[in-house]
Every structure is written in C-alpha cells, then in structure tokens.
Amino acid sequence: MHTIAPSSGVTLKSLVQQTSPPPAQISRFVPARLVVQCGYRFDSANTNASTVNTNGIPASNNFAGHVGASRADWQSSCAILASKVVSQQQDTEKTGGAGEITVVNGHKSLDLVPLDNNLPKPLTITDLSPAPMHGSQLRVAYQGVPGAYSEAAAGKAYPKCEAIPCDQFEVAFQAVELWIADRAVLPVENSLGGSIHRNYDLLLRHRLHIVGEVQLPVHHCLLALPGVRKEYLTRVISHPQALAQCELTLTKLGLNVVREAVDDTAGAAEYIAANNLRDTAAIASARAAELYGLQILSEGIQDDSSNVTRFVMLAREPIIPRTDRPFKTSIVFAHDKGTSVLFKVLSAFAFRNISLTKIESRPHRNRPIRLVDDANVGTAKHFEYMFYVDFEASMADVRAQNALAEVQEFTSFLRVLGSYPMDMTPWCPSREE
Ligand SMILES: O=C(O)C(=O)C[C@]1(C(=O)O)C=C[C@@H](O)C=C1
Image 1 (cartoon, rainbow, N blue to C red):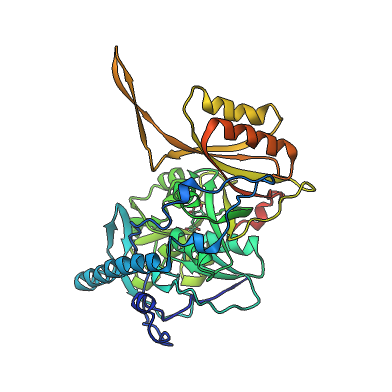
Image 2 (image 1 turned 60 degrees about the vertical axis):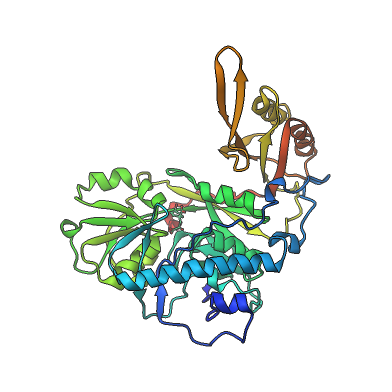
C-alpha cells in the first residue's frame, strides 16, 4: 500500500470562489487536527432513502443526488465552513498554545503545530475539490494520519491502494462522494469498545454503499519520546476507542496520569513528537512509533489479546451480490406504528434461518421522541430509533429477499446499506498491527 498526500493547496476559499488553479506549495504549518464543525446537512433527503428493488439494491444511485440539491448548496455549505475554519484558525493563532489540548464541541482538539516531514497530511474539508488526479491505483480514504489503525485496515482491504488520510470520518465519506477517493474504509465496531456510533449515523446520512468488511486485530502500545520513563508521565492521549480498549491495563500499570481523547491514535503520537512533550504518552501502533520517532514503553496493552476492530469498505456503487461465498447484508429501518414491530422484524429472519450478527439502535434524528397520551396516567415519552441490523445472507438469496419484503410491511423506512462478502480471514495473532 502507498500513501499519498491529499490534493494539496486547494484552499476552501478557492474552492468556493472557483478561481485560478491551486498554488503548488502549501504552508508547512499543518493542523494536527483541524476541527471542522460540520453542523450543516449534506443531504436532507437521505433518511427517506432508497427503495429496495427486486435484487435488494437501492434503486437510486445517481451521483448528482448524492451531493445535496445542487452545487450551489455545496458551495454555500463550504462558505459557512470556511468562515468557521478561518475564525478557528485565528483563535488558535491568538492563543498560540502548542502543547495544550483545547475542547471543541465537547471533544479535545489539538492546536496547530509546525511539522517538517514528508508524511501525507490528512484531508480536511478544505481539500475537497472535485478535480482529483486519477491514477491507476485505487484511492482509499481513511480517518486519521499515517500509522492509524484505519490506514492498516485500508491496506488490508485493498493491498495495492493509495491510502488517503482524512481528518474526520465525514471528510472520508465526502472524499468518495466527490470522486477524490474511490473507496473509504471506516471502523464500525470494536470487540472491547463497542460500536463507533458516528459512522452508523454517517452511513444513514450519506449515500455510499457497503461493499466489504475487514477485521483488523488491534495491538496497542504505550509510546513516549526516547528517554522518557513511565514515572515521568502525567498524561496519556489517544483515540477514545483506544483509551477504552486499554482502560484496565492502564490502571494496572499504576500510572498517575490523566487520560485525554484526541482524534486518532497515530495523531496522538505525531502530536507528542511535534511538541516534544516529555510528560505525555500516546496509545498507538508500533508503526506509529516508527513513523514519529517514539519509543515503545509497553506493548500489547489492550485489555484483551484478541482485540479486533471491524471496518466497512464503502463505495459509490453497490456490488452485485452473489451466493457462491458467505455474504453479509446490512440494513437500517425505522419502526412503523403498531405493537411488537421489532419482534416481527427479527422473526422475519428467524423463520428463514437467517442469522443476525449485529443489531444497533440510534436515535431517530427526524423524530427522536413520540408522545403517547394515556387519559388515566398522563403523557408518556417514547424514544424513537433507527435500527441497524447485519444478517448472514446475500441479497441474491431468495430467503433474504423474502425476509426484506416482509420487513418492509412493518417498517416506515427501510434501506439496504450493502450486501457484501464476509471477512473470513482466519484468526492469526502474528499479523496483529
Ligand atoms: O485512531 C486510529 O488509529 C483509528 O484508526 C481509529 C480507531 C477507531 O475508531 O476505533 C480504529 C481502530 C481502533 O479500534 C482504535 C481507533
């Protein structure tokens, strides 16, 4: 796998104003984490998504339909984002607090840091120009910086790909929608930390299709600058999932440290190196240690040696489902009125001997609460959900088609997110990341 730099030099302003070609050189000051506050709706019609046709593939797959109503919508979204990004950069410049982690939208974010290496920089929303250079290699977007587990997952899913780092999950989705990348590889769940809810929400909001899955053994290390001893540490930083996956081990190590969340594991390592932080350690991969010149203080610090993260591969087009190898299908649906709807939906699979591998519920964004009046006891507030279900069958299998036809009768909304080959790679601890 190769990594490439995102299409450099395209400022958000130039994208919005459609002016002259981008400058060849961008500033060496790159945001370790440029936090873009994506409060806009990219495609408001998404939750009324596609209908299911006879082979189970969502009928609507028109590119223009993916990117909001028009290019003007996209540009005005960019203009709003541009002003937020610029004002945020100015704030950061004013405070100039390298070494400090600030809180933005409830998340810790890292300040601008000078960086002098040749590693590809993560795509930010400002890089999303729909004029990619198209080589022969598959371009695969992932969230994080080089050395992130997601980069390893991209390489496992597409061994000869060009991996494109993105600073947020949202940007990875948009990179595919805007043809900057051909695929995105994003984590959806971990065996210790559970679901990555953000990606479930984004799967619904965007119109990409799941075309595969890949499971990556995740082997965490505690990293610090060369010469730093564990006793000197006052803080451990990492992705919230990585902190969760090492929670018990960190306590057992007896470190007197605060734990702080950042956007990705390798980004934490990069941040320590860039700011020469001798009191801070990162939880990240051995590859991140190598890339950012850190030493490994402890290896295998995840609470379970068989720690594994499941990633999905996303594309603009669905793949044609087959029956000659094990397939999985992912759907999302919302309740219709009536009783025992969830039971009825799950029964549609049980009666056909189709195994469910996962069920996840998320708040129904358009209708989070339903009020039910009872004359005797008052008004009850019921939470409304979107249910995500994975089941072990291909949409080419008539059992799955019949099950979904039945599910459609009980639900107000149903979308097939993808029907794709299951990752059947045998468990092999020696190939841990
Ligand atoms: O931070 C990284 O290195 C990532 O690739 C993200 C991520 C995640 O989102 O779960 C991926 C795998 C591990 O579970 C920990 C973190």
